[in-house]
Length: 317
Image (cartoon, rainbow, N blue to C red; front, side, top):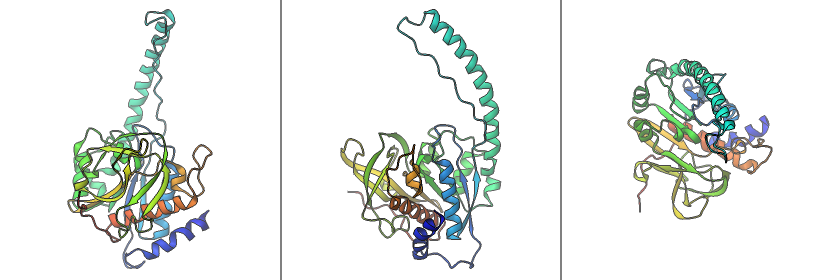
């Protein structure tokens, strides 16, 4: 697997425009995989792939802010049965749930405190040590030390790379949504789609064909404005019901003096790695994963100012 990874990746690395190895210290990225909402099963594998991309490129290094252990699981609230909400069985189940939920809330409070501690790495003071941040399928309202300070740090000239569920983060914080360029709205069943390459000259899409077929969970967005982003990948019809339209998949943009790259692909393990499967099943060929890694690497290097690519919004018809 390691030999296959190197074989697939090295030609792409050589083709990118960045300074020769040894001319400067590697850039530093902080990879965040903390979630307070849904947690994707691909996260452990994606951490490994990002670390390999850093090592293979030699142009950046990664540190991680990982999920603290011990997250408690919320108890399931009982549903009202055919006998109604006054039935003895339902009342007993509700009484049990109330006790279990009380214990869960107490445990969750303790666990959230460990999340707050882990995310101290994103304090404005600590971020001075980094050139960019990756939100790798983060979800929910992350308790950052200074949310607006984080947004301001990106705008001051740093890189933000968002992967898949990064747009399912901070739904109640408009400055984050404006920075990343869109907000997750919904998705249908996983499906095979033909992604249209909107910019074959950009580092993130240069390795991809004019139409790139991928089987994945395809997001649809709200609070997205085509005139505010530079499109990289899109669909010309709804991924599930085939209604014609513009359905963005990946984009980049300038944000103040900073650079933002986002790709919504990356739900499935077999999108991330040529040898991986999801629930014992492969839906993508090995070429899809190798090209996804090239897509991601190109976006990272572009965000760090180490690879070529336009960020101006394309003309909107």
